Image (cartoon, rainbow, N blue to C red; front, side, top):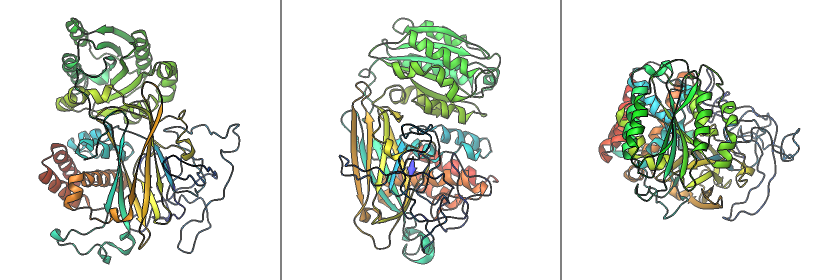
Length: 577
């Protein structure tokens, strides 16, 4: 998405580069500003009325834009912020229609410094990054920083949020926040307006945009499901906690599905084959269990063949009026055949677009091809999760099955409009590869995120308000298509400056879920930034302090997921960078 700001400061002379994580030798140390990165010159002016009162003024066309200085202009104001970029025609040179290749979810592209205060991104409910990091830390290793995606850490705690939910399909929008450097007198901290936390951090806030769908219906009320399971049976899946866990998970899930649900099984190693065509469960559960029991690890990993055969099987067994989905279970360590996510999905593009068959990726294994699985799910109009043990598997395939197979919204995107009168700088934490050009927010041909019932989506911004500012800070709008009729809908929410003045570590933020959101964001930032010399959050606490905060929150909320988070952070504090 484009995270933009007219006045943009730097945290360090070098900044985070496009993509995931921070590159070695780049980023910020200390507390002096936001990271920057260099842009290719491009900006656009888009004007027009917006139904909810937003005014798009000078929307730039680049999907890789940012709300912080990317070093694209040497001209700067007296305070060191970059000067606004020039207004240029929509679209880069060399395109006939003003649309650049790559202006889609997950396609990063550089652009000139924007002259607007808009932030636009595709919604994301992936959680695999946090699950894999937790597994890695349990084994006494720090995760590779490139596998750490902050939005997936944050969205792993969706059920800890107190967002109001809608009655029907679609979303509610909740916008709130707090001072990032606010003091907690009970812990002996001084007043937040003092210089204890650094003069440059006094005006920073966390602003949270929370989106929620309706609660998942009772299993008897949801539409029937037609699920094609694509199962990796390559040699690497022989490791304990891989294929054995997959078989166990599928067995439990088969017993939980309804009689009018259908299941197909495809296995792949060096080649792919349909083990079980689409089969209505009814009296055939024993047949499904028998097919699951035949799965054994064999040769190499031709993931491309597996996905292609899986979609072919799903199309052959397509059921009108049902939720048709391909579920990929793999360690995603592709080493034979096609190994590029885009090329794999190009093969089955008709099945995805014409039949609306979405992809749900379930990762397993201590060695896990995170980047490939995440890319497949993004481009396959789906999402990912990660399971490391039987408890995780039961959560995914039993407790959370409706939200993982049903849909309440297609191509969902969010756009946040910040008020330049009150906001000096802002930055979205995470969503690096879910970027959408601002002017594509209402272009329903542009890919968004697919969201199911019972889901929440949280976007966390670091916002620097202007000293003494009051009044409107931001308006957040979510746009989505009805999953059946493809009719577009929008919902909106707003926030004022006064609503951001509470302390981050107070009782109210604990109850609302804002504290766990902040802790997850800080933790992800530490894992992907500390080892390479940079950070993306203002006034970040040490891992030890963060572990203490999480432990205190877990005790106050009696939440098992937050207790696991506290234990995970505690493990990280004892490991070398």
